[in-house]
Image 1 (spheres, rainbow, N blue to C red):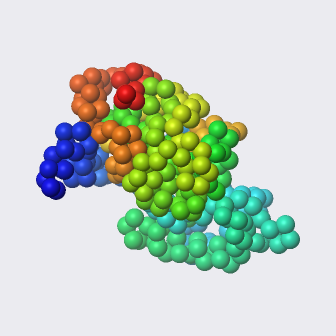
Image 2: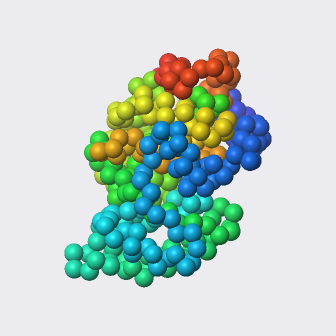
Length: 319
C-alpha cells in the first residue's frame, strides 16, 4: 500500500522530500550562499541593498553583555518584534503589540498576556545563547518593526500577521500560499504550529481552499470566515519581488516570505533555502509539473518582471 501511494503521488506531480533535497536543494543551492538566508540580519542587508522593502531594524543584540541595552533600543517604541537571526519555523519569535498603561516596563504580547522587561531580557539571553539557532551555536537577536497587516486579512487571521510564501525555482515563481495565524498556532503563520495554509491562484492572486493540520478546510477555524476567494493586494508586485529574490540570494530553489503592511505595503519578511512541501497540499497540486514547465521555457536573460508574468500566465488554479 505504501508503494502504491508513493506511485500515485508521483503521478500527481507531488514533489517529495528526498527529491527536493537531492534534485533541487543540493543541485541549485550552493552551501556558501546559505548564510544569505539562514541569517536574517544578512538577508535584510542584501534586500535593502537591492532596493527591496523589509521591516525596519531597531537594533541587534549580539552577545550577553548587550542584553541590558534592550530597554534603550525600544524606549520610543510601543510595538516591536524580537526574533533569532538564525531561527526557523517561527521558534523564538516574540511579538509585542503594546505596553501596560500603568507600567512602561511591562509589555503586552499579541495574545494579550503581559510580560516584564526581565522576562524579555531572559528570552533575549536564550536567543543569543543559541537556543533557537539552526546550527545550535551562538546567535543574534533582532529587534524590528511590528507589521500592521493589511485589513483585507482581518477576518482570516487570529492574533497574528498573515504572510505569503512564494516558491521560486531558478528565478521563476512556481507556487504560492497565504499562511493564516490561528489560536492553535499562537498567532504565528507557521503551518507546523497550526496555522492555515491557503493556496493561491497565481494568475489572479486569489486564495483557494485551505489546509489545516493536513485537513482540507473551507473556513478559518477561529473566525469562521471563508478561506477561498480573498483577493491579495499588490499581487503583481509580490510575484516580481519574489522573483528578484533569486538575484539577491543566487539560490535556485527558494522560499520567499512576504507580508503586507497596511501603511507600508509589501515587505520581505525572510527567505528560506529549504522551503517545506505542504504548499502543494494547500494548492491541491504538485510542484513537479510546474517545475518541468519552467525548465521548458527557462530564459536566463528574462527579467524578474518577465518571470512573474510567466507565472501568472502559466500557473492559474486548476479547475
